[in-house]
Each structure stands twice: as structure tokens, then as C-alpha cells.
Image (cartoon, rainbow, N blue to C red; front, side, top):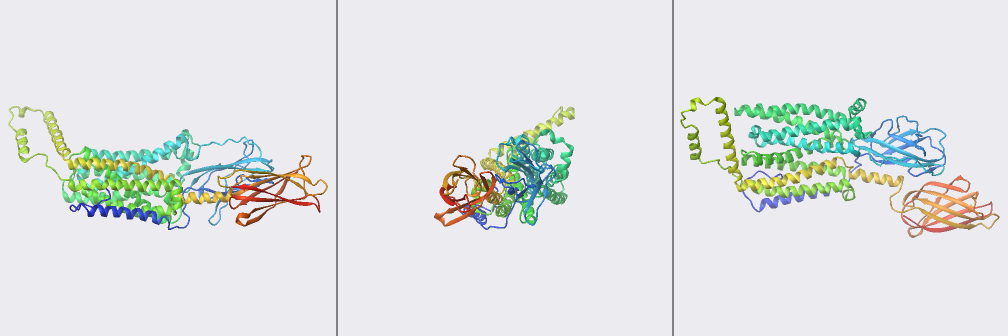
Length: 640
């Protein structure tokens, strides 16, 4: 029922064709504008580089470790930890230094002096500017790789039982917001008589209770969600205070304050407003409630916009109000749909005029959703590869498909709406007869107690309502409308769940950028280590030996190179000079020179050896054993 205009007479051919054309145009615009491209838009921060790099082997211990990120992050004392091979802290345990400059976001931690050789683990955890926790770990080695006893938790930041409960609260908060705002808008705009209907009041109040409870849970769990992952820390006052100093914490507190104003709005809507009988007074109160309620609803929606995806990246000043409009349109459409479903199943009084008014509201909501959704998709995805190759893009495709299904079901609802009529409860004669029966003289009427009279009145009211409901339920058009609206609501629940998942998923554009940065800093997943053994003979005294080469991880991108030279006796052999060159003859690439550094007797190493593309590479090794004795040997190796 959502994407349809108010009923204006039957048109069995043109309206379906127009609706289909509108849907096709909207979908085409969404996916077409994804290709427009733009400057970088960020949401979840991602590690884009480090010094030392992941897997690097350095000759001497660095003074500090630095990490670069794709966007601004919030860090604490333990956001970056460096652990030695035995698991002890190798950093000074001070708060990371902000080394950011220009558009580069970089943080560093100082290391203790005199660190021994071995493999060190860098573990980091921070909070993205869009409120989501992020974490990761990598290793580097001093001197040479070694065994390490460090065992990091496999649980990602924001995971575990606390993460599950927090995510449930996030879903519940969106659901409560939709019911609260959509249900209230449905009563004010579409069916003012619903203010006196107990099922409608329960729907809106339950939406308010759900949103309030979910917000309290998220506020209490925010500290363990982004930190320890332990429920016990939910009531840590110091942790709660630190949460209140953050943007997400301030947004949650603001939401609770606005929900206090929303409680007053609900009390007036289903109290004073429902009892107003004077038409002019009711119109004035409707205007006041619409303005006040609209401000509160926009404020609650803004608590999401100011703390999640819309608040970071390009054009944040435009993205946040667009996000508010998007959330309000979702609430008006899906919350109104839930309200219509309750009205059709639980109340006998809703008429065809209210249903058609909701059709108009839903149509306007879909137009707003299409416009704001196109902008959000362009901002967060930006390319076909990100649309199809990232989880965010795939969820977005699913969301658009669900909207298409919802609009298709809504078209059937629209047809039932066009046939809907308001059936009288009973013929006038029947009403008159019932009235005569209820007012017939009764010898004992004067002796009936007030309590008994009130009981009889309630029974007659229930009987009348039941009779009205039975007559309306027997209407085939109303029954068909109920079934189609129920199908719409079922699809809408799935759509709302997918929308909520999108808010906690790294946008496709950022994921692709982070993957590109990771390729430059480390290496993609394909390939494997390259191990070569090459005998040589320079022709001079002690000029025979064997060169052993390890290229790890043996993929395109950055690699670590280790070279060992063994003499004819199998013992490590030092030489005055060692050089390497890599050539991909099939692509006319190279020779790419590599000059490794001596690490120990008979052992040389080079880090950050770049392999630009996969292929059958020729590795030339030049060994000089004296001032005049030198030889160059080569061997091919498949890399990548």
C-alpha cells in the first residue's frame, strides 16, 4: 500500500504500468548513480599501513611503532599494545601519540630501549568516528623471526555475548522508533479516531517502551561493548563517565531526554486529544501536536545521524539531515503499515478514508526514501565493484530487492483499497428495534443498582463492537486488504532488519579503500612462500657454495626476502657482496634490483620487496667472494 497515490477512481491499466515504471526508474537511478564516483567517503575506520609493516624483519629495534588509519579514531591508554615474544609489554604503556598531519591519521607508541631479537606482536583496538569498535593485530621481527607465546583473543571488538546483546538492543531501538513515530503519525494524519482506540494506544506506547529500554541497555553496555567485553563492566561508573564524554554516549543521553518529551506527547495524544469533541479545538490541538511531535521525532532520528555513518566522511553537513529525512520516511511508511495492520485486525472502526490517506502518506514516504537512498548509496558505495564485491553492497542490493517486493505487494493492497467501502453495522430498522428493546419498560428498572446498569452498558458496548467487527470482517474487500497488508508487514520486518544491519556494516567504498591500502602495506591472500636453492662457483679460492632464498609470503605486493649462503662445508659463509634482481620477461618488467642487508654471518635480509604482478619471475643472484671472483646465477620462480 505504500508506494501508491490516493485513490481517484479505477484505472486498471494505466496505474499498474505507471507504478512499474516508477519502480524501474527508481531502481535504475540508485544503481546508475553508484557509478558516478566521488571523493573518499569513510565510515568504519580501517588500518591502512604501519611502521614496521606486518611481517617485516628489521635489523635494529625501532624507537616506536606507528599505525595509519583511513579516518579519525578515538584511542585510549591501551589502544595500541606491543608484546614481546614472551607476551610482556614492549611499549612504554603510555597513551598513543597523535602523529596525524594533513589528511593522514596516524598514531604511535614508544618502545623500550634495548629490545632483544625476536617476533613482536602489535595488537590495537579503537573506536571509529561512526561509533563502531575496530581491532586487529600483526607481527614484526627484530633481527630474525622467532617463536612467540602471545595468544590473542580471536574475538573481534564488539563481539562476544555483550556484542550480541548490544546488537539486539540496536535492532529493538530501530523497531521501537518505527512504531512510536509511525504509529503517532498514522493517528494524527490518517485516522484521528484512532486516538480513542486502545489497540493503537498500546502500539505506540510499546514502541516508546521498546526504544527507551533499548537505549538504556545500549548506554550501559557501551563501555564493555567497546572495551573489555564483560557484562560486569556495564555498571562501572568510571567507564560510564568515559562513555558520556564520547559522541555515541552523548547521542544516547540526548535520545533519552527526547523520549521524556515523547512521553508527554503520547499522554496528550491519547488523553486530551482523544477526548476533544469540539472540531475547531481538535484542529488546533492537531496542529500543535504535529509541530511538537515532528520536532521530537526529528530530534530522535538525529541521535542516529550524529553518531553513525552519516556523521563521518564527505559532505557530513548534508548527509546528516538527509539521514534524518530517511529515518523519518522509514518510520512513516513502515510504522504506518504496522498501525494499519493493527487497525484492520483489532478495531472495527477504521474507514476507507483513513486507508486512502495512508496510501498518500506512504507514497510520499517512498519518494523521500528513493531520493535520500540514492544519495546515501552514492556516498557509501560509489562503484560497481564495491556494490557486488563487499558485504555492504550486497546488503544494499538485498534492501533494494525487498523494497521492490514490498512495492509489488503494495500494488495489490492498492487494488483492495480502491474497492473498500464503509458497510453499515445494521439496518436502521434493526437499530431502532434494538433501541426499543433496550428502552422497553421494565417493572424492576427503577430498582436496578447503578453497578448493574454500568455492567449492562459495558455488555451492550461489547456486543455492539463485536457485531460491527463481524460485519466488517465479512466484507471480502476488507479481508483481502488485511491479507495483503499482513504480507506487506512481513516483508517490512525483514527490510527493517536489513536496514539495521547496514548501519553496523563497513560501507563498500571504505572497505575497498582499506583493501587497497592493505595491498600496499602487506600482501593479498593468493600465492605462497617461494624457496629456492642455487649452487654457485666463482672460480676462486673458497668460491663454491649454495645460495638459499626465502621470499615470504611469495605474493604480489610487499614481501620479505631472506638469503642464506652456505660454503662447500655446509657452514654459513660470508661474502663481500650480494645482489639480487627480479625480472618478469613475459611482461618486460625489470630487472628490479634488490640489495639485501647483512643480518648475521651468512644471512642477509630485505623487507618490503615489491612484486608488482603475478608471473614466472627470473631471480638473478650476484655473489662476489673476492675482489676479482664473482658470478651471477639465476633461477625462475612462480610468484603469486
